[in-house]
Length: 244
Ligand SMILES: *Cc1c(COP(=O)(O)O)cnc(C)c1O
Image (cartoon, rainbow, N blue to C red; front, side):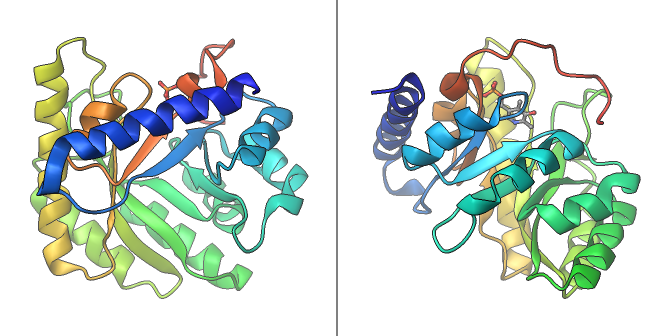
């Protein structure tokens, strides 16, 4: 078996164990997004051949090149593309035309730019997550987890756009070796998700957890995890500071 297929099998087995471990508290299935940023097209094909369907990319232009090259993998039970990196408004139109999901919407201006471009493209509604900043780190994007008014206003704006579909929330939590810290941050994001779900019927997605902590995220109710290096290996180049 190819390493990527083996790695996927390992991750999926850990997800299954974490779902069993958490018992009946949470019932939604858990979707794995394979994060392929900086990785070549052949590795995405290998993961696809092993059954993986959802892929996450961070940089709009890099992603659009791959999405076009892999156009043949689209279709029924085909590849699904998630934008998980920060989005500048000058890239919103490009993102709206090529991705199926945008997980990093944290302000109204971006939401409206995506809505306009998606409507013009005549594509089905774009799936959107509101990004929540739970660690309080300035360097991280997202609406502050304590800013309930802002979170609800943004959710309302997204829900009002026919060309967008409000699916839930995503968060990149602090990178910590302390499991209690990770767990407490996942619980805070879960709280936002639960609150919004009471108001918006289209919400079903809680995206949290990466290579180092996805099992904990699943145990705290994640319905979507974003895993890169555990599937594709360590990334060579350091990620650029600024979205390109
Ligand atoms: C890179 C990235 C991931 C995956 O990170 P790994 O640690 O390689 O699993 C997940 N989510 C976001 C938003 C990322 O930028």
